[in-house]
Image 1 (cartoon, one colour):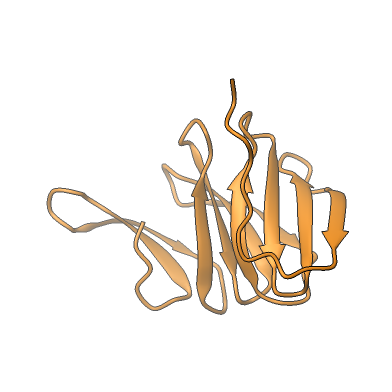
Image 2 (tube, rainbow, N blue to C red):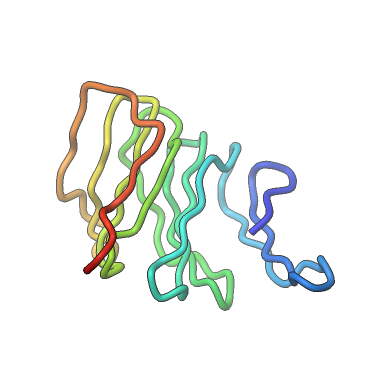
Length: 121
């Protein structure tokens, strides 16, 4: 993944450097990109305060998550790909159900510049 003008992502061919696919949808800088464990989907977090879930093969937007009030610094998938975490400058971390788009939990109190899940196994 390559971020050229800060509001979209490009998927590039590793050998040629040519664009394969463009992921457009954010309105401000993309700050974070994460691939699902199976490599089929992608999360991108942005300074537009949104998290977008993409289909990797087509570039199609599957869902947009809204709930932060400041830019998203970091995003991560759970090991089973069913949940996501997003960390924001609004001093919160949100746990999302990917399939439904529902907020499962919110933790607040400190700016979250990096979120991660423990590895499976």
